[in-house]
Length: 355
Ligand code: ZN
Ligand code: ZN
Image (cartoon, rainbow, N blue to C red):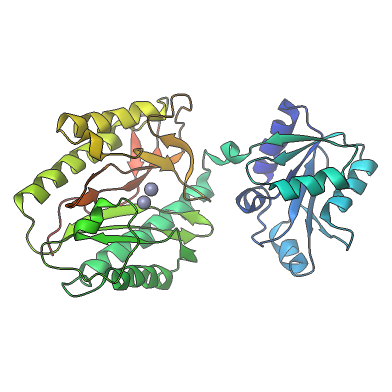
C-alpha cells in the first residue's frame, strides 16, 4: 500500500497537482485498502486522509492503516475538503473525471470555490498488477475453473439456461468467491448467436452448443472465462467452427507479450477467423484487461493502437464467431503478460467437450 501511495504522489508531482480527491470505489480500495461503499480519499504530498461517514469509520480504521480517518460533518464532505485545502494551502486538486457525476462536480465547485479542479483518470495506475494482486486474480481464476469442471456434470438436456447460471454462481460462491464477476452469460442453441446472451428459461436440448461466460471475484479481483460445450455429439459445422475459434484463441494467446499494442494482438486472431471466411461474424475486440474491474484498459482490440502491453498486466483472450439463426462459439482465457509471451491462468480444457 505504501508503494501505491508513492505511485499516486509521483502522479501528482508529474501533473503539478497539490492533491487529489479519489471517489471511484476501485481506486479508493486500491490506494487505501478501504473496501466500504462510501467516502473519499484526499491525498496530498504530505497528507493522506479518508473521509467517510458514521457507518464506516471503524472499518476504515482497520483497513486503511496509512490514512487518517475523518468523520465528516453535516456540512458535507467537500466542505471538509475545503477546510483542509485552506489549512494546507492547496490550490490545484484533481478529481476523477471518469467517475464524478455532473451533480457531484457541481457540488465540488460550490464547496471549493477557490480551488482549481483538474480532471484526471487514475485507472491506468492500476494496470500493472503487483504480486498480491496476481495471487488474488489467480485464486479468482481457480474458483471459476472449478465451477466449470462442476458444471460439466450438471448440464443435461431439459435443464434451463437459468439453472446452469445459478449453479455456476452457487458453486463459485461456495468455493470462496465474494461475488460473481458480472452477470453470468449462458446462451444455448441459436441463442448463442448473441455474444452476451443472458440466461433464460430456455431448456437445453441435445444438439445445442452452450456458451458460458462467467467469473469470480476474490478479494476484489475478477476472473473471466468462457467455454462453449456441445450437448450430445457435435455436428460437422459445429466442429468446424469450434476448431476455427480455438485456432484463433490459441494464436491470440501465443501473440500476447509485453511491448505490443492491443491492435497487433487482436489482428493475429482476427486474421485467422477472417481467412476462414467468418470475419464479419467476429464483431467484438479480442480481449480486455481485468483486475478490480471486470473490463479495464488496455483493450486488445482494433481501436487500441497506442497502449502497449507491459509485464504483469492481466488480459483476456476471447475470440468468437456468432452466426444469426445458428448459434455461437467463444473461448476465453485470462492470462498474465510476460516479457516473452504470457502465462495462461485459466486451466480448463479448450478441446471441444461433448456431454
Ligand atoms: Zn468473459
Ligand atoms: Zn471478457
